[in-house]
Structures are given as structure tokens and as C-alpha cells.
Amino acid sequence: PVVPVWLRALGLSSSGYVAAVPAARFTGTAVLDGDPWLFKEAWGSVGHVWGRGMGRGWRWAHCIFAGSGGDPAVFELLSAPGPLGLRLTAAYLWRGGEVLASDSALRLLTNFFIPDGERLRFAASFPGLRAEGFCAPALTAELAYDDPNGARLTCRNSKTGSMSLRLC
Image (cartoon, rainbow, N blue to C red; front, side, top):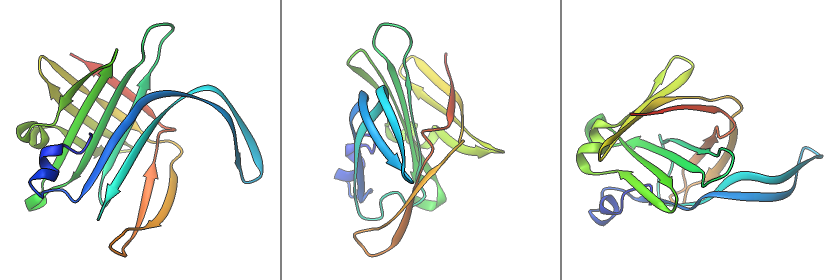
């Protein structure tokens, strides 16, 4: 889960997100404004967001790093408004069926995912590893929807952007 389970258990988050399949291959055709787009073995992911007030103020990044051969690596960040004006940022790194999580209370407060000019800069600490870099949103898809509590929300997805990630 990208929203830490312990936050929901303590009643500190009314939303949840699970990256059910962080890296998957998709083949098929999508039609956008009457134009067909053919996908063959395209990388993507399958996730599920639920709850009340979900997505309000979230910053979210998901990137699949797939080289030739071997398992892809997946890096995901989720930053959301927290108490007292603080932002809480969780990060996850998947590779070879294993996941590293940076979602303890201390790390939620010390990780960051912040605007920096035309991009979003981030840093997250894992046991024995630090991830840092930036996302450069390019094309951003937007979808307006009604939250279960009646509020009108907008999901902005910039998976068509780029990410620079350094592990040290």
C-alpha cells in the first residue's frame, strides 16, 4: 500500500492507494478523440485509489525503469497534506518481487516531494539507501470526478513526463 496502513489504522488517513501490479505489460488499442493508439507490450501499472477526500493535494509519481532483460525497477512517491500544514511523503522501490518502503512516521516527515521551478524535486530515505531526483511533468492528463463526500476533485496524472532518479 502506498498510503501506509498504520495511518489508516490510526484514523489519520481517510484514503488509500494500493499499487496492485506496479509494473505490467499492456497490448491493445485505445481511441482518443477518434484517433486509435496501438500499444504493444507497453509498460504500465495497475493501482486502486479509494476513500473520502482522496487525492486532494496529493503529489504522486510512478516510474518504471526497464532496461534490456531482467526485472524492471519501479519507484513510486506519494506526498499528501498532513497535520499542521506539514506534507507527508512516502516512497517505495520495487525490484525482483521485493519492495523497499520509506513510510515510517519519521520518514514521512523527512522525505519530500516539492515544486522546484518547472519540475518537482524529491528525496526519500530507505534502510541503507537514499533516493533523490526530480520529475519533469510534460503532458498531463486530467480527469475531474465527484468525491464520495460530494466535493469535485481533479486527478492530474503526468506519467507521460520524465523522472531522473539517483540511488546513493
